[in-house]
Length: 381
Image (cartoon, rainbow, N blue to C red; front, side, top):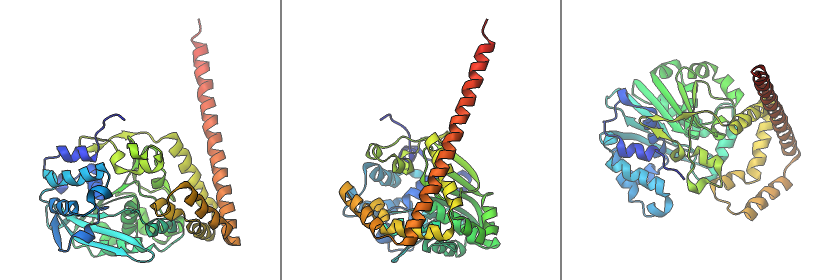
């Protein structure tokens, strides 16, 4: 695999102290990645600097075995990186219940009234993945979305920047949409890194905040994104980022695209590119699935997904092809009438959308080919 610059390279090269005036999209991704580490377990004080937190994380007994080389390098570079050496983290909070996994912290940004709020994405837990699927039908907010709303409401800063990757991106966007105008006015910018959208009913219930979201939200998706384009497409500015998959993800490109360490960095920016054709087709197809299924059908579909063990498979709790197939078959066998009907309509909607999108793609290619042939014919002597 060719060499490329990513957030680890950025940490090695960044020297200037981080302030709001130079806070960029790569900084936002760095902080979003940092939120995945278990700060709530290793830190017992109210405030800590970024390098001190990194040092504490390196003392985790199974640090080297628990984290990949990229993730280890990330923490080691944060210890040395001058850019974050004076930035302190506070308001470290987390929730672990039967239905919810959520965590967030705040980074002071150089002045007392300025802050960067960071929210964690989905970790390797079955509960976390199950909560992700419930985004499809919970219209007033999941446990994580409600926790995000409360966290943002209780922030004292008057200039707030929000960032998060995956479900963390959804949480920060949802928190803004759910907030009252006074809180929304404090938010300067929102950086969402491949975080999915919301269901249509949720957007309708928080329509005022959702309408304002587009003016402050910046969406960054990998070129082959699928996860970030689930449910209703996020409003706001959208950029697709060039990726280079790590070797460990060569057999699972979907998760490999989602991996922040695969996103290419140049200077203080993520490297832009075009959305891949596969991502484009899947996005349109999944959007049609949401539009063609009712809230009730999505509820039963998610119930079936959980029964089939899909969250446990994605979290790694169930491993191996045989175990995966057994869980799926057992789930399908035990499905009730409503769940089977929901699956039928979901598959039908997905296939209809896929066929329509493929037909459009073929028609476009035929038009381009005919135009090219006509142009070449006109130039014949």
